[in-house]
Image (cartoon, rainbow, N blue to C red; front, side, top):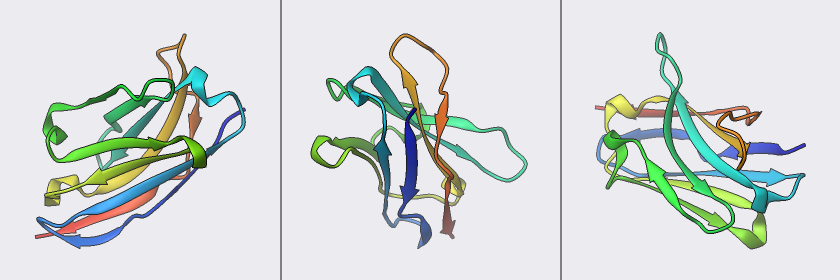
Length: 119
């Protein structure tokens, strides 16, 4: 059973940066891939990007490529989402999630953290 706790959300002006963190515990993390999702009011949750814990391979949705970076800190069992050049359309609740490498479904979720980008 993997437990996830996000932190680092807040209010930032357009063009600014924020760094979200997701502390993971439980399970053998090398057997998991971590993902970041977001959900804005009135919209469906969407995938932002992900990282494989074992080798650090990352992948992103097109709208955040070049602006967002996902990294991991093995010593602290923490995954980070560095968000630069933020836009008002990035405003959402951001969630981290985990899935086993043998599954396409994310079964473990954090509580979410609010990111608000003002214009």
